[in-house]
View (spheres, rainbow, N blue to C red):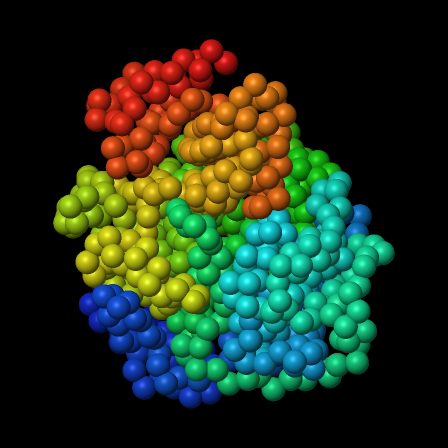
Length: 637
Ligand code: WTA
């Protein structure tokens, strides 16, 4: 038997050593014993980071939905696969069994086929957190179409960019969505986006809010009547191990979003194996990850990882503050949640509301707590541990990325002793390295550097859709033969890792990665703006707040600055979405630049955080005089 379920620290070290000494043998055993294959592989792994090219389980054939659904039908057919908790607590929760999920995915797959989608086609899914979202994703996987889920908080223009980049032929959306006390006109956003997309010929629309929307004839179709007529059986398409499963966009430090491509077999094996171990999921457990399926966390740890293990996974449509700030705890109590996985920003927001919300609910079902998305500060960690887990539930602080597909550095619940703010140890098979700026690996403990990974792992992204060169440049060119994560980290005296944050121009706001370049591009489109630079400043709930320095053209001078601020934020909302709005906009007469013309964000970051005592040597700047000027203008506010 392979070591599928790790139970204590010694076992972790033992399995870890095995996994790095002979990765092929290790992963072959895991793949062999725990998954359903139509055909086994010829080669476990081939790789070359200089190209970069990575292939896992080449020659194997499978369909991931057979692993997520069909193989559970005999043993777990009547077990709940998905618990759907609606936005409004008065609306009844839905329990979808594996049998029902099978039928619904098959029906949906038949509809996709009838509507002309076939293997390899791209389908954009722009839906709120309703069951149809998970079902649409699985239906795409069943027919071999590549899903590209776009978070339903993105604006029409961000949606259009993503649809066009992957040339999706279909969009699956809903008439609208519920979010707390608000309803959002999703279909209107899609209509607006599609004005710029020629590739889409069909839009399938889920009726979620019963609103009277415009349906473009010949293009838009209500989903329900099509599903009703469809058969509840669908023979899954047989996929090759390295066939793309999905594209998911992530912000880059420059230019347009990167469509990370994940392939089938390696992604499946790694997400399933990490899910089982990190959370120590047991057969009767109810697991809840509060992320949205629009992000990688939802893909890997709401849909694929849990379902591949025959787990019960909760999907929550709403927000933590509606109708009250006790909503998360009410759901934990109601569904007797055993593993709870959320983001530090949510923890901080809830901590701010006080413990009375927690005291109203029985949280004794909780066995494991998880966090993801950004570094968790010590205060939030302890609040989570003391009040939510009552010091009995280990916190797994999981570090990973859209690009890595699955959890990379993390405690294994009950096996790895936790340490506040530390993601602790590399997961089985993961070989991290800390690198100094000149490219040398820093060995030993009590050191810090840039976090890289030295050896391939099964769920790593294989490319950026349509731009392999950018994939190489972004991740494999900084340091030879290494995957560069973009994060900094330190290693303590026992070898535990602590992630210190991004070392590039990506800022994480409330757990969302935002590249500075796309926001600056949006601001610069304002006719009165000459130039802009965005930096992150520490914020006690959001982790980071966005601070923008904006210089105006002559035409902008003398205009009402509050109005300009509103207009700038409006532009950002339209082009990216409300999540990217700036908290502070400071107008300045210039931006500090190097002699080669690069904006010195390091200096701006310090000014924005009111930490101007040690700005370093600014004499080499092209325009050192603006620094003093900017400091004054910020301090006078
Ligand atoms: C950050 C989310 C510290 C990190 C799964 C990474 C973290 C980026 C942690 C990826 C953590 C994620 N501790 N930082 N536990 N988890 N990050 O692509 O900067 O949305 O590079 O994937 O989030 O964010 P993404």
